[in-house]
Length: 325
Image 1 (cartoon, rainbow, N blue to C red):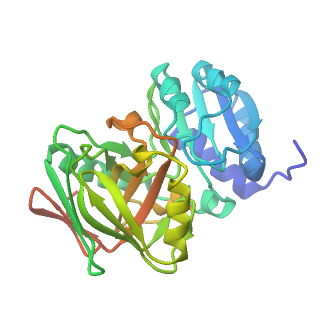
Image 2: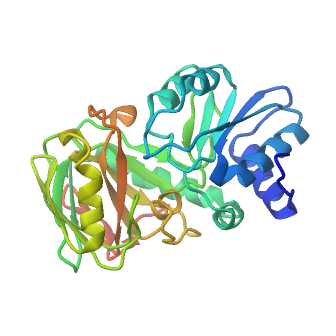
């Protein structure tokens, strides 16, 4: 199809995604949404979905310009009508109205923004039972928490409220109507209370739309908003991107903890935010997972080897989770 050579290793990864993670059944409508850069993965998912007896639909759209940009209206409407949506796309559809409405209609939605063939093959072999246990344990701490403090040896010292907010669990198991998340999976994340973040974060792993960092990006927060972004050329690139949007794009929209032992920092945020031993913050939108901010972007920054306190108690020390599972 579309000149794509079918490869066994990609078919095996597609089978895990469709059967182990999404539990696709014969006769279900499975909508694959992709774009030209990720066509190979999209086609392999379509081929495997057909082999599994699903009503497989393949849609290739023009690549979005930024993460969180809405898909075309016909694609959004198709998402609401499908039993399963799986979206290997260049830019993320995770934090979009289209994804939110599809899940509300009962679709099981897996987004795979920026995934590479290497990541697809490698991360589908992870023990998702372990990922699920780690994720649930972290999420429980966040659910019961009121205040988070993050510090690192580089100088990060950020506090914010999570009071009355509930954590999302990205476990890789999307089997019930309305379930949604990333594949590969492995994070617990939460929307900080707007207006409460104060301090500084040094992002030293990677940054959405920038890639793996050669030097840290320093982000200063006051009353929930990133007021200053400092560093080298990579910080300048982030500033340039944010300059196109309003203050909502500078909102501290997310705090997340990676729980996937097979993931590594690769410059692809889909994988980077799942790396065990890291946390990430995001700038921008969070309306679709418990927050109040709608923005045209959602930009994740990875912090390596952090120490994390929830209500004064250690959750993570220098990148090591302190949990009994």
